[in-house]
Image 1 (cartoon, rainbow, N blue to C red):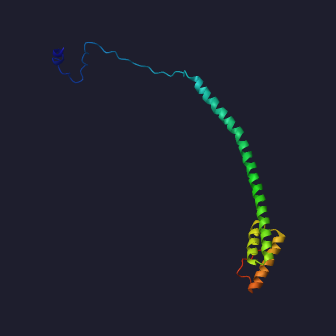
Image 2: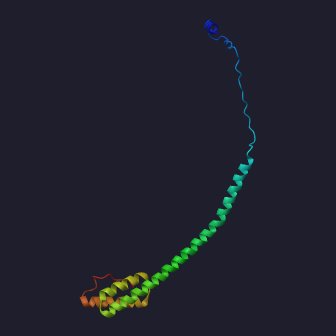
Length: 150
């Protein structure tokens, strides 16, 4: 066999191919063609799952919006209630300080209460009264204090 391989002459350019070895190796040719999928059930399941999720989400979003609206209203009611307690406390504390003669402390309490409810008539009268007392005691034109616009 080796002798046969070595005694072969070199091939000429553009000549025909050499003959194969002793056994011919089969060549496999494959043809590819479009075929329908055998797994159609999974594809349909995915579409059904997608539409189901869209349905669930579209039904829950309005409920979430309504719940957040209710929660916001509850927080707003709580903050108003809390502000009412704070306003009442500051007004009561300011009156007590005014009664005890602590005018500058009463003025600071009334100023904080004014930040919560600036339209309260009683508070505005008490603020003017404390400002008059402070200005009279110091003998100034009230330039040291922040004048509130009424």
